[in-house]
Amino acid sequence: MSTQVRYKEIYRALMRDIAEGVFSGGEKLPTEQALAERFGVTRQTLLKALNIMKLEGTLRSEQGRGTFVNAPAAPRPASGLRQLVYIASNLQESLAHRALVGVESAAHRHGFSLVTCNTRNDAEREAEYLRRARSGGAAGIILIPYFQRNRELALRIAAELPLVCLDNSFATDAIPLVASDNFRASYEAVRHLIGLGHRRIGFLLTTLEAAREVDSVRNRFEGYRQALADAKLEFDPALISELGPALSHMRPSDVGLELFSYPAMNRLLHLPCPPTAVLLLWDELAPGAIAAIRDTRREVPRDVSLVGFNDDELCTLITPRLSTVRQDGEAMGEAAVRLLAERINRNTPIPPRTLVPSRFINRDTTASLTK
Image 1 (spheres, rainbow, N blue to C red):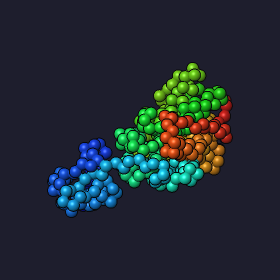
Image 2: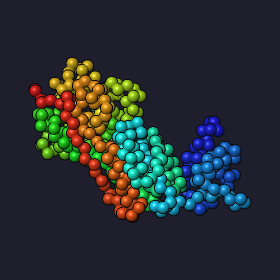
Image 3: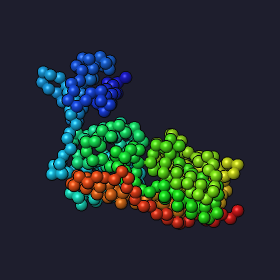
Image 4: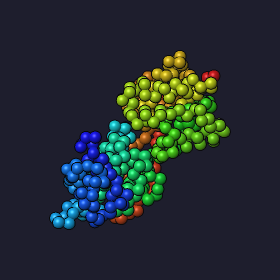
């Protein structure tokens, strides 16, 4: 294995040890010889990892004493460094990008500078950015987390400085959440389809794991199920179609918009009793869904109605224009900054959950059931 790969592994292992409390703030690390033996590398390879951690402020060297873990930075008063850190799981996603617009606007209005970090759906990178924000003395953090991987680290940091999650949470009131009212939005979208006479309504999502772990997905799934229950319609698991683990970690542009959701939609269409309407987890699933529908000699919305989520630009660029749920990402970003500012400036407690309303936009992909 190359030296470059080995020192990165050492870096990750030591950062994990610190995050998990194996080495706490102010504690001396084992000797360089002991660490080199632990990882089975030369001292030169070990030093590459240690030097990076020193440059980042995670470690420090004391002449004649050794290498120590830096204690967590104390929270700065409002008169100190007025910097917010926005950490997004994927800035290519429309919600994260729209939220950034709101975060930037509100940060400027409240007198904060802003650092933006894109983790690209990488849990280790997310952890690294969280630690840097803490050690760098940030006044507050806005985080769109990637699943639940860094829950314990986020809880420790939230005990030291204000941290707000956006869109997805760590399922704890200890870290406040600002999000769309995904349950209500999904519920209303499905009720709209039921009102058009649809009884077999499918749901195309990423994975069922996401429906358990990711707030926004879970709440949309629960809203979908509740709308069915309130209409006395039986929930049919066969009407849930997953992109699958591989595709769920990719963007539609990686494989092509018309291919991305095609297999998942195709599975629904070939059921013995296929759905007459489908709720899509995001708008970008629409092109592949429409392609699959047309390839079975069906049409949207004559044979299958579709409803998306987000109100991306593509909604009005595809034919037919997509009916969807509009999320106000900009308002979410502004709300997150406002709550942080009140906490930093006046020590005002942040409520555990702040929900921003969404709105159903009816365009051309839903129609009354005619058969």
